[in-house]
Length: 358
Image (cartoon, rainbow, N blue to C red):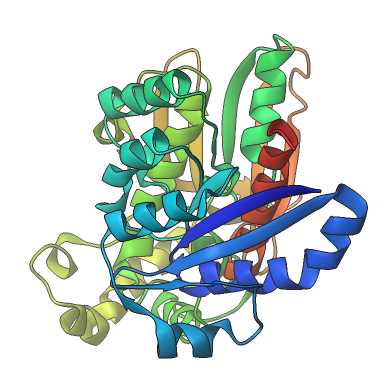
C-alpha cells in the first residue's frame, strides 16, 4: 500500500471540499489504486491542526477545538518528528505570501500540488527559479486546476508538447462568472446590472464583482498557458480589456460601484443591439503563439460555435494545432467551483502518487 502524507494549507471552499472527497474516496483508492491518502496536518492562515490518527469526518469540529496558532516551522518540525514519507503540500489558498514558502517546503522534502495560481503568474525569474529548485531537489509540482478547475487543459497542452505537436493558438471562455453573466445577458431581456446582481447573489462572482469584470484573473490563466507553451511573458504584457469604467474603478469604493452600476447598462445594451441575429457576446481569452500576443476582450461569436453555444457558467477552451488545422480540440465543461476544483486537486494527487515510490 502506497501512503501519501498531505499537509493541507487552506480550509476554505476548495480545501474543505478536498478533505470530504478524500474521506469519501478513501476505501476505493485503497482497493483500486493501492493508495492511501493521509492528511496529518490541516492549516489555514492562522491555525493548524495535527491529526494524530485517521482522518475524521468531524475534522472541522476538531480543527476548531484543537487547532492552535502556528508558523511554518511548527509544521516542518512535526513532520520531521513523525518521519513521514511521500510528503505533499497542497496549496488551496489564494495567498500571495504563502507562495514564498514553496522553496522551504521543497527543500524540506515536499512535493507541491497547487490550486493557487500565484506561483505561475509571478515574474519569469521567479517562475524559472521555482522550477530550478524542483529539479535540484527532485520534486514534483502539479497545478492542473490553475486553468479550468477540473478540466484537463494543461494536461492536454503537455501531451501535445510531448508528441511534438505545434500549438498555434488558444482561445476560450476562461471565467465561469463571466460566462454566466454574458450567457444570461444575451439570452434574457435584462439590464446588464441586473444580471450582474443575480450572478453575485448566486455566488458566481467575487464579493467585489469588479474583480471579475477587470479580466485580470483570465489574464493570469492565459499567462499560465502561454508559459506552458514556452512563451517568455509577464503579466503586464497581457492586453486586458477592463469592463469597469474609470469613474467606478480605482479609488471608487465598492459601495459606490453598487450604487452606480446601472451606469454600465447603456454601453452593454448598445453592444447587444449591434449583434446579428446569429451572434452573442462572450468574454474571451486569446493567445496567438506565433505573434506572442495574449489578449482578454469581449468578442462577438456565432451562436452555433463552441464559445457561442455555452450555457450557464461553463467554460470552453479551443486549442488550435498544426495537425488539427482549422478544427480545434475543444475542452468544455464546468470550469469553476469548489467541488470541481477539489476534484482536480485530488486527480493531481493521484497522478503524483503514480510517480512516487511505495
